[in-house]
Image (tube, rainbow, N blue to C red):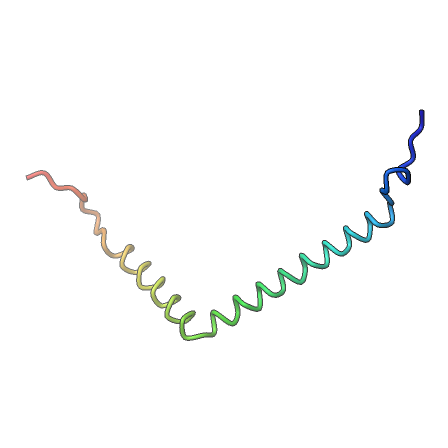
Length: 73
């Protein structure tokens, strides 16, 4: 008993068109996200966030001088 896909409204061509449209939408979304990231990095808030992260990294690197965190007296 052979069933054809056309009987159920499934068309191979429309599936391929849907896949291509989805792929194009993902590419556009990725491009927009990249553009927003670049705009943020170039903004004052982005520069402040970067400076803050660098400050935290320096602080955590220099805060432990090889001494135990908990000292027993």
